[in-house]
Image 1 (cartoon, rainbow, N blue to C red):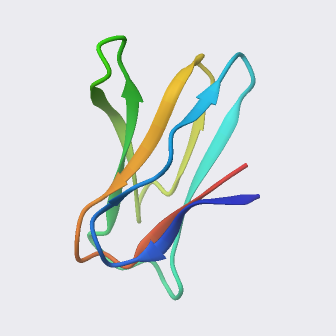
Image 2: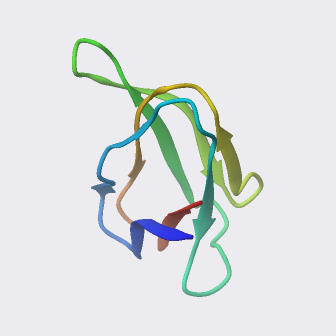
Length: 87
């Protein structure tokens, strides 16, 4: 498991990561219990270089499996004390 987006409360985007056919899992993490209302957005990078939200991670849905080739990142809004790990 590797840290994709370190836990914090500032708005932040992870570094891009690319899938070329393998599967990757994302986990929402926190330094304590995941706060109610906390969420991050999973984004895919389009051919035009823009990012598009394709789902999210939240306290009620803290795990997501990505299996389509592409370039991805996660985006955290300000004020939520969470991060994301990747397997």
